[in-house]
Image (tube, rainbow, N blue to C red; front, side):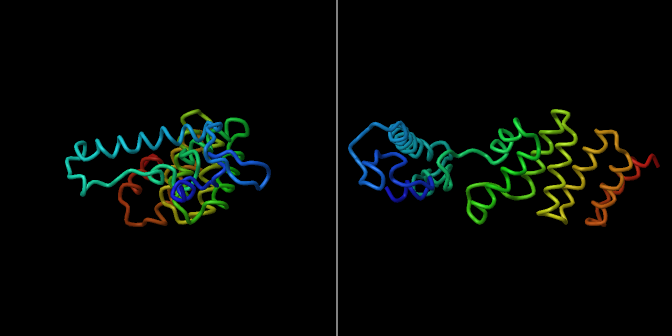
Length: 198
């Protein structure tokens, strides 16, 4: 049971009924849906581990086994951070998405639960851009620079977003910053010449 609580970042009463505040857990009760789900997930993991060697073409001893932590990584509901941020942004735009990132980073940074790399905000910017929410896209990229000020990728994507918004001068400025950070990148230099119309 200790492996379950560690893998999901929960206490025993997440699945087991607790008798009164701070009381003992009723381990026999099947009242909580989470306990029923846990049982099904244990069966699922066992079946997956039985089939996995044939799927990957390795012996059982050479096949990595799947366990709760494989997906959960310390959270009860294993969801990509970008999906959680997108849900928050649905009601409050980029500021809400960014606030959710900061909240999760404060709680989980240093662990394996969520991806706090520069890719997260870039993905959020691309999603916002696809929805023609250019200001939100740029807000995500600016937030990314707070954490990764030397991110060439962020400035490259910012160039694309500013171009999509019709801000040619801003796009040129962002691309020039990307080249400043990666001065040997011939592809970016070519893009800059094209953007300037040379």
